[in-house]
Image (tube, rainbow, N blue to C red):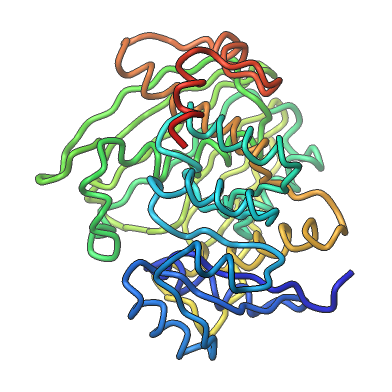
Length: 364
């Protein structure tokens, strides 16, 4: 194993300002190059972290630099071509969520990497949040018995458009943004889903896509999980960016609520545990629990890159989350429940593509 893995970051916008220092919390890696189409952004980030090689041309970067992997932190529309370019160079790829702007392109990205035997990961960090990891551990300990019902809620009026104004221009907004996270948390806690029903609304003036959505999933286990997400909720206490989760079991309940507090209730009593995130000096306090989880997500992927284990959020695993996101849009359009087993058959990972997917493959 190499002493240090050399990598480049492609995209130097809002999230790169936290993704890069999160990498630097870990040993065994070395950032050696940055790309951004507006090169001044790459140069500014490079100056802050002493990375002199900055580019506004990805092909030039990939040709000149000796790399062990790339971390793609660009807008979703660029993910597919950048993954293809890295894979053609034989480089393992990490990609931000959402994986792609369509289910077909996400499928084709998997194929691109699979055909070349290229490791492909998606940076899905919500499942690595300290309180959610603790919640999972409590579930596995069986403290509430067999879970049969759950709700996962992320509702806020935090002005996310101030830091990420491009979100207002998306035709598909909250389900691809927050929904990607919540669907993945649902899978992390409860396994795979068999059906999904979703409704949405656009509340904030000036946005193209939806900023409110509710989805009801039936899991393979029989558990019902209700997901609520909103960027338009004016609440008495806004807890952005915390996710609230209530899980009901046949022997009790688990309630992840504000302040990283998990309330464990059984017929005899309620016990409270605090699962606070690690604080790092580079974090934005407003995003603390999210920024801290970036380190743990990076660590999990790095171990896989070093050959020390299997990463949780491989592209293949995250494709199951991507399917839920696009099933939600299908449900909204048709005003109907989506049978996820039928969707899985259509978008299997066995190399068999529909005519529309073959068209998408040619496009990239």
